[in-house]
Image (cartoon, rainbow, N blue to C red; front, side, top):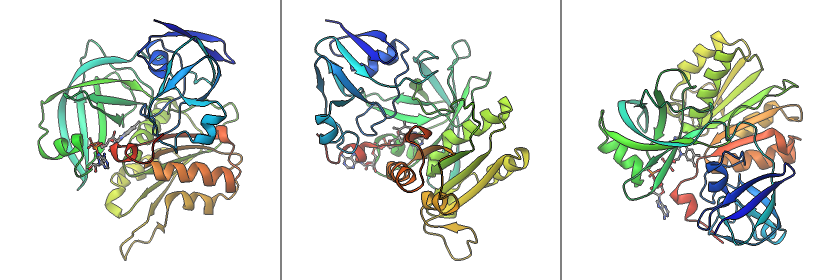
Length: 343
Ligand SMILES: Cc1cc2nc3c(=O)[nH]c(=O)nc-3n(C[C@H](O)[C@H](O)[C@H](O)COP(=O)(O)OP(=O)(O)OC[C@H]3O[C@@H](n4cnc5c(N)ncnc54)[C@H](O)[C@@H]3O)c2cc1C
């Protein structure tokens, strides 16, 4: 049986089928609820249940704590309606703009950017292009029903090609395959675009901080390309963190963009730098805090390891006066993250 979902304060309404989460129903009907991992691990789709009854599937306590649950908060990606419901959630302009589609994708090239990072180029059907916003992600649909998410690393163009940056996670179901068996011309099934991590218009033209760890650089690269294509002249400082120099795997590419974009500054930061590294060291979000102890006039786009995203969100708002609504993030959650403390 279908139930009606009403979103406040917009008043938008959509139908959720019995076995469908509120988020899946919203995505299907192009309603722009905010979300990230779709797996109960990142908390981006947290919203408040104002009326009605739901069941809530397993989720990470760091995504939705018991105290938040007691106050009526739920995760749209884990909630199924038992009655008509009313939820309170902000909506993201443009999040439902492009339809989510399944399609075959042919691996056109696999190139090592670092010992544990590859750039995979996918050829998509020319007649049925994947339209997306720079910053969004797609999912590989694996044969056993599992899905794995990867951010597009190129801005959308007319060419039916997407670029992905994949880091090897030893023991990982999909990246073990990519690093040991994936071949050019291999056909995969994908679905997308997903996610609400993309650049927002900003009438105030506030300076932006792009914060990336490891392959969290992928969607940031797409955003930089889009800024250039659109002549977006907002000031942006990219802080890209890794353990070793090889983790900043497109350092030279970023330096080339700095030469093209006078508004772009680049600060690579290493947490386990070898002797000889003359640049910044430590945790990447600490470098931001050292340079900008007052972030009240900035907007931050953060992407990569969940631990980095969580620490930046907390420390920037608690110690650097970053407004809560000026922090946008995609946390690259994995099966290991999902295996932790659950409710
Ligand atoms: C929105 C989003 C965008 C993303 N974009 C990117 C991207 O652009 N680039 C990128 O590299 N990654 C990205 N990721 C992460 C990516 O989706 C995968 O999670 C990652 O590549 C690992 O997939 P896998 O199948 O190889 O590993 P998995 O099978 O998911 O395993 C991951 C790790 O956890 C371990 N593990 C598996 N199961 C358990 C368990 N039960 N308990 C403990 N440990 C376990 C494995 O040994 C492995 O080391 C993104 C994630 C999200 C949510």
